Amino acid sequence: MLVKIDAFRWVCGEERISSFATESGFKSDFCSRCGSPVPNILNNATGYWVPAGLLEEPTNVSVAAHVYAGSKAKWDTLSGNCESFAEMPDPETLENLIRPKTKYNF
Image (tube, rainbow, N blue to C red; front, side, top):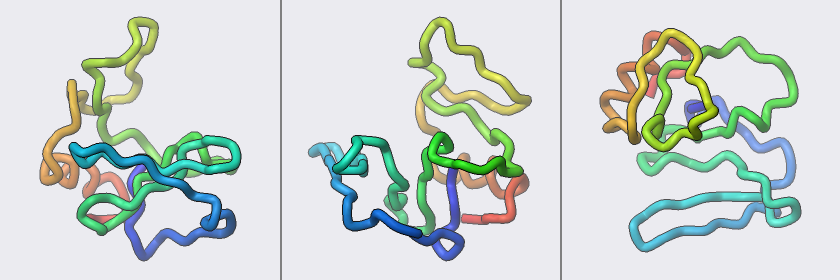
């Protein structure tokens, strides 16, 4: 999920974050203690990408789009009534999909 930068704050554990980056610009942040992916600031610094699996409490969010659907596992099914993209769409397309469905506008 995407969260606007001013709607996000670390509660604890920020000092344990490690990063891996490739020459192409891909970056992944993770917990140096357990290896779990952690929130990662977006390239345009307007928000954070937050792995939804990190949420402990139920939340009122919905799927706006399926990205990288072209490389999903054969057993995986895409749910929800939303668009699917074989790869990551351009930022403007993603913004337009998210804007009407959340209170966090990028």
